[in-house]
Amino acid sequence: MALLSFSPIIRKFNDPKLLVRSFCSSQILQGSAFRGKWIKSKLPENPNVISSVVEFQASKNLTIPEFLRLNLEKYENHPALECGITGRIYTHGEVYKKGESFATALIHHGLKRGDSVCILLPNIPEYAIVALGIWDAGFIASPINPAYTPAEVARQVENCGGKSIITLSELLPIVEKVKELAPTLKSVIVIGDPKGHHNFFDMLNTEPDRDKLLKGSDIDTETQTALLPYSSGTTGPPKGVELTHSTFSTNLLQALTPGYRQTFYNEGTDGERFIAVLPFFHMYGLQFVLASALHHGAHCVCLPKFDPATFTQTIRRHKPTLLHLVTPLMQFLLHNPDVTKKDLETVKGSVAGGAPTGKTLISRYLEKFDHGMIYQEAYGMTEISSGSHMTPPEVSVTKAGSGGTLLPGTTAKIVDIATGKVVGPNETGEICVRGPQIMKGYYKNEKATKETRDDDGFLKTGDIGYHDDEGFLYIVDRLKELIKVKGLQVLNKYDLIMACIKYTLIALTIWQVAPAELEDILRQHPEIADVAVVGIPHEKLGEAPRAYVVPKTKSLTEKSVSDFMESKVSSHKKLVGGVELVSAIPKAPSGKILRRVLKDEYTSRQK
Image (tube, rainbow, N blue to C red; front, top):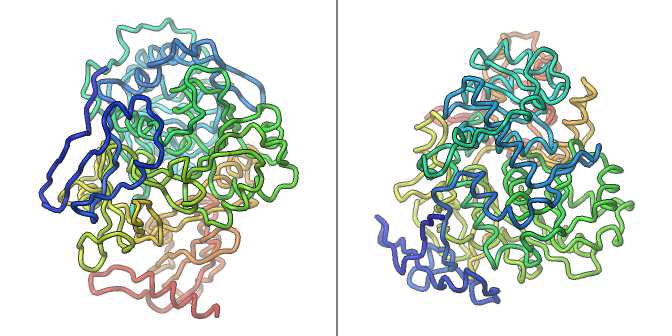
């Protein structure tokens, strides 16, 4: 295994202020348990730019499947993925072998290396086989939210140039409409009744041809795109985020470094159990639930839809050792009387992400456990593969509400919004991050890629925060204009199957809704002259989209605008915050919408 070291004594960049220094030897990384000395991550010479104090070696020259199966011999016959509904189960060895069979069959479909293959699936065990097969075949995996409308799916398929799509038979009505809208789509592979399309399970009977499978030695894993999830980034409609084999593997390796990983992890044992209810199409679920389980031999129980009773029963039946959380799921576990302390007695750790959680919620959540459960939080975004910061286990309670310290190999700075200068500890500004886990760029969008990076290679996250004196990150606000929609809500069930999937994914995810995307759709209305969308406070959802519309005609009504959006967007993008007809949209001389003016005006009227 070839490794790229990120442990120079001192490394200088264009700006003489930017210094990166490693304070730990490789001996610490290889086995010693960290106990406090590594917590402080600021640089004594320059406290304004900080780096991880942990010496780190990034994964290099390995494809994602090669990286994940490095220790397969330790747990080859252990359970890997199980359907929490049907009990369908695969061992770790079976997952990789079937992935190779699927890869070989995909190659026979006439696709060429570098082509994009889309995944339109809920959380089922076969998700891992599909992803591994795509990577083993040398293709790019582009996961899609199965709650999307046909137009939204088609938009991603067309943008990424998707040649093939893997889906469920229940979702075929969606895919049939997508085929009409996205001409790049050539083949459909179905898990379930194929109805004239390719049968996924028949493809698994293909004899693996390992000579044709992608090997890390054949490519540059640091530049070869492996994954193309879609993110709204800091502004604008969803964009494809290019993650390479190396960036994906490295970010997982960073989080599993001693001192950050849960101390009870024991690769190759038969005892670690996850419940996978966070969606695999999202980087948190794909990387830190699914890929993490494959990497160290955990038993991952997949739930394709969230149902309170089923989720509670799954906890009791499978006795998880680690819970992956977002705020709504924490609230469910805290407030649901059916989930008792006894039900959670096997849980050794919890990891929360997606959005900052308040100290009060964390404190109350910890009261559900009578034993020494380790609680951690992480900060990141799709453009960072998943994470740049994580709370070390030993200080999780005293630093509650923090996104943690920098992961190994990562550097960060806080930049004053007004002056562009790097500020010191406890001063707020835009969080900027650099490291081996940062995206390659936005797919076929050089302009957006350049806008999100500075001259020294730091990714501008669009989030406002600060590092304290010990290097712990706290999120204060966000510069970006995305609307964060969260919470457990009842949905319009236009289709039973889709409603179940939507309820699951929306209930357990904090959605980032781009105002620009909704504005583009609203501008298609023949009676709308101009429009602006902002997020307003919402008791259950955190935030909800609200549209300000300049009508072309007197016949336009708020209801007609809302009705226009009903069939065009997913539930979390609907105008739950309302519609208001206005005479003009406030704008800067540059033409940029002054959303803050609209939000402040709305807030003042609520007082």
